[in-house]
Amino acid sequence: MAFEGLSDRLQSTIQKIRGKGKVTETDVKEMMREVRLALLEADVNFKVVKDFVKRVSERAVGQEVMKSLTPGQQVIKVVQEELTALMGGEQSKIAVSKRPPTVIMMVGLQGAGKTTTTGKLANLLRKKHNRKPMLVAADIYRPAAIDQLETLGKQLNLPVFSLGDKVSPVEIAKQAIEKAKEEHHDYVLIDTAGRLHIDEALMEELKQVKEIANPDEIFLVVDAMTGQDAVNVAQSFNDLLGLTGVVLTKLDGDTRGGAALSVKSVTNTPIKFVGLGEKLDALEPFHPERMASRILGMGDVLTLIEKAQSSVDEEKAKELEKKFRSASFTFDDFLDQLSQVRKMGPLDEILGMLPGANKMKGLKNVQVDDKQIGHVEAIIRSMTKKEKENPEIINSSRRKRIAKGSGRTVQEVNRLLKQFEDMKKMMKQMTNMGKSKKKGFKFPFM
Image 1 (cartoon, rainbow, N blue to C red):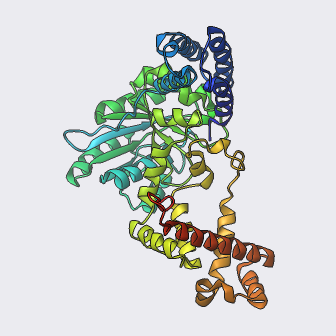
Image 2: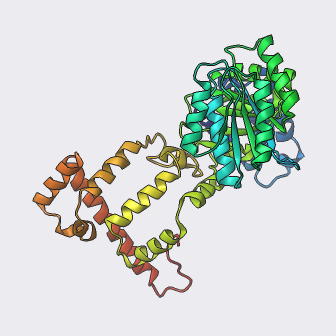
Image 3: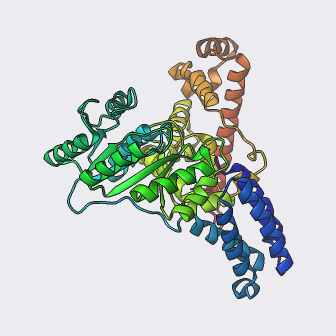
């Protein structure tokens, strides 16, 4: 996660004040010095840091904290609220035109991931909002930009409007919108040209496209890994075009995350979406309050629930619950479960959404390798149907065959069988506890 360093620093700082029954001005000053350093190290804009520290300090030594029953907790609440406000306060939703199609103009420098993000956004509009988007290839300068968008269109099974690279972007945008009206598309996403730097020719052309397309949204796609430069780019594009939103890409990369904290304050343009990976569904609406919670180690349960709801098959989940209760869970069920969890995204990202996960013993620096899950799947798939249903029949020669068939070692096969056996024993114990006559007892986590 982009904010890892900042997150660790802020959490260790607020931990010192968390349980305090009385918070003095000196406590707040010390805390704010640490917070200031943490934000500056995360590449947050200096003026933004200064204003943030001032606001938190004023509130933290004010009446709302001093008269609170738990001043330490109240200070943390203040930090969380101000961090949320810094990133925009509340989620900024995508526009919907009263007279379809809604036109979105995608702008940005070369290399920020603009074309891919255009495809991801169209995919999200279709999957989450049930819309009918059309992609428009209006970047006629970058070699293979049109091909790239058309390839994305094929992968996502979405229409791409193109007139090749000999027609002006202004004409392409004009004809695309007419075509979208004829074919009743809800959204038109125009992928415009980028440069390696901001120049007059680029901006003049983008202004002309804006004039003809009259977009409902102008989204700047910016690479979070460029840190402070991302904010400067956002400011320049905003001054010249009047942006309505920012899409931050590569927020899952090894970056300090300062751009996400600075961009709203400096440009007064909301972050609308964030890219969190290479896959074509790795684009999410940006929720400032959820991001603030994650930075402060409070988890992001709402996003976790949303991911689960969109990935988990409800009927299968109910069936699985019955098997849990009767402890008749097989290796086939285990495979099912693994594939559903995988749909939710990278496991370390899912763990990061659990409140306090980074403080849990053994989870602090856990590196969940998706390859490991692949190895487990390979072992299970190398078993016969009978073996999956009755693992107790898997003797020494069967173990060797399974290891050979999956390309894994016999030790790995043994380890998986042992873990599976332990899990079934635990289920039996839980089921017995669930049958307990104790008044008010409820079956665990069901």
